[in-house]
Length: 106
Image (tube, rainbow, N blue to C red; front, side):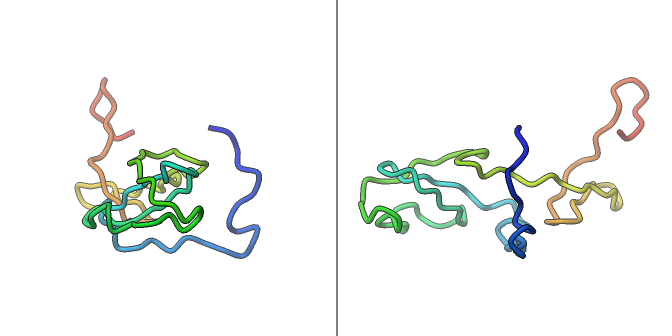
């Protein structure tokens, strides 16, 4: 991945994790006509997106996976909490990674 030309902090902005981000239920869709990208909650029906806010068409939406259109998942800051690693930035969790040789946390 290449380094970004600027960061949100350069403009005095930051991302505050939403509940969907914390729960891992956000999805990314892209307008089939102009390529505009929308990040929203997985539990909603895609047709609810309706017309694209960028090009005002109803050409449909394509489900995408990150990275897309320069949007990518942030670098997690993992911290061991009990038996899980928890990101201190977004509260996502995962099983701890272990070294294949000695079983030690990596």
